[in-house]
Image (cartoon, rainbow over the protein chains, first blue to last red):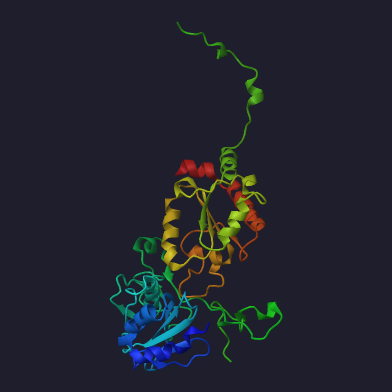
Length: 208
Length: 169
């Protein structure tokens, strides 16, 4: 039963600032960041969207404004439909968003991940620490300006570093980026690989 | 009353029961055939490590079936899987807690070189933090490959000057 068809209209009756969002699959809405918690609460309590499936973020690239968007996927276990709620962060330099932990406890770790990867601060979050990278890590790896190989960074444990001299390095890409050719039938050919493997971090790529 | 010692005289049977060998060989023989692994299972290679330990491949044939989850009781760390930077110091600490003599097998592409994870989060080879004795290729390696690595390591240990090291230390 496609029960979500009318949800945008129903939401707009209560929240006129909600606008439909271009989407190829699910019903989707744009919400101003100040109202996102109220809208999610209305979806949960009045429209049966009782399950937060995913909470993530988008970085639209440096120089774009608004730069960061937080995206919520909410599911209804009663009428089995999804809705996508997107909210742009007001500040492009120090992005922030009110926390959804008060609505769904499961938002806790999702928000920690979005903070870890994109640096979006979730106001009111009970325990906003990094969840994947170590606490002292200075970068936000899924931001557009962050290189895939990483940036050279010291490791957190001074005793281990003193013993081993190890540090987080920019990973050797060996001619990357790794790509899979689209439409390949031969799996050996379609396997993700570096475009040009004739050079490496030891032997520099010859100048063209 | 003291019981008279009947063994005081020459026992002709002893000569037949004595084996003369080099101390190195004896020590190495003991070490190679009871090499208890520390299963440092960090990713999918750990599944293959379990397969190696199970009945079909049976790592017990090489005396390495006693997977010790305490570093104090293990001799050989098998790093099976992707080592992230966040995990790296834990791996090093566990290695430090193992008693000498100790050896390391880097199992699979990730542990050996970072493998397919050319990324900001992955240690590019566990040999950046601990000394590795044997590298095993594969993603993941077949159990036979791990057994081969274990045999290679046993071969390496057999050639060690262990007695000299014991008494010079």
